[in-house]
Each structure stands twice: as C-alpha cells, then as structure tokens.
Amino acid sequence: MHSTLHTTALHARGFTLLELMVALTLMGMMLAAGLPSFTTFLRNAEVRSTAETISNGLRVARSEATRLNRPVSFTLAGNGDPSWAINIFNPSTGVLLQPPIQAYSKLEAGRSTSAGITPFAAVAITFNGLGRIVSPSPIATPNLQQIDVRSLVDGEARSLRIYVDDLTTPVLTVNLDLASLLDLDGGRAWLGFTGATYAAWESHDVIEWTLKPL
Image 1 (cartoon, rainbow, N blue to C red):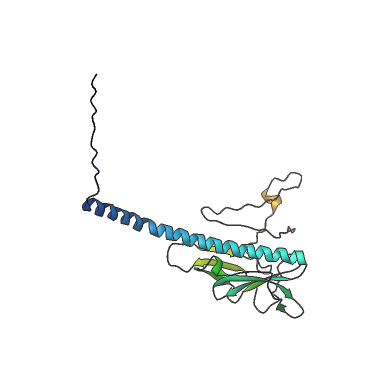
Image 2 (cartoon, rainbow, N blue to C red):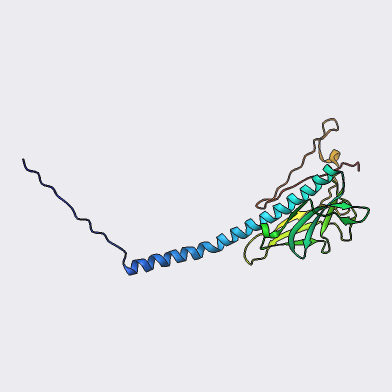
C-alpha cells in the first residue's frame, strides 16, 4: 500500500508601500474626524464634574448648618475660579472660622473651567441653623444667586447653571387660584412638583415652599 503526502507551501505576503500609505492616510482621516468630538466630550465632562462639585458643596454647607445649629457659609474663590470652601460663620465678629469644614480646588477636577457669578460682586452664601439662607447677606458681599460653570477651552462644550435662590429675589414665583383652575374634590387639592428640561440636564433641590391664600 502506497500513500502520497501532498504539501502546500504557504507564502507569507506583506504590505506594499502603497498599501501602507493608504492605510495610514485613512487612519489619520478617522482620527481627525473623531478628535473634536472626543475633546468636546472631555470638556463637557469637566464642566459637569465642576458643577456637581459646587452643588454638592452647597448641600454640605446647608446640612452642616443644621447639624451644628450655627451659621455656615459657602464661599467661592472669585475671579472666575470655581474653587470653594465651607466655613462656620461667627456672627459676633463677622468672620469665617478657620480651618474650613471642607474645601475644593479646581485643580482636583476642573482645571479648564470657570465660574461666572450673579450678582457680580457675590462670592458667598450663608445658611442658618435651620438650613435657610440668611438674607440679607451677613457679610460684605451680596448673596450668591446664580453660578454659571463654563469651559475655558474654545469649542462646543456646554455650560451648566446653578441657581441659588435668595429669599428676597426668588427665581420663580407663581400665583395660582386652584379653586378657579381645578375641579377640587371637596375643596381639597394634591400638590406636587415636576420639571422638564428637554435635552438639557438639571438637578433640583426644593428646600422650602409655602402656600398662601390670595
């Protein structure tokens, strides 16, 4: 019995110089098309991280004021710097006690972000022992009412706005006569809060609300 062994030689084939140049050109075009979108993604993430840190700092200042039953101030660094600090406020001397309860530096996450302030001269807001905003401001500058977090890098990065409601100038006031608008059940009405932002992103904290007869 005879058997025949057939072997096939496989020849390795590499890239020609022309094929390599075409592949590199295509890769470069793909990177050039995707790089702006990736850069915008990074800038948006940085803006959101900074805005969330400021919002969390405001929440911590309010909770510490109620926990300690003492005035606590949340203070931004100013001049567009989103860095902040939380300090106990001494109403007798009018100064912030050091060291701060908590502090944040923009070098931690928001190197390329800025914080626009409204009113222009405002840098701080103070909460009393009940967690309410002290109004008018007990320090030399007016209370913070609005903080706009933006990217310092030119591009398509979105800005995020933080509202800090001052009791003397509320962000939103709505007068409703429920009896004329609704068919009430024995004069009773259920009240709730909702919000819609379409494609935008927001976080709401309803700290206090009241109902008053018209």
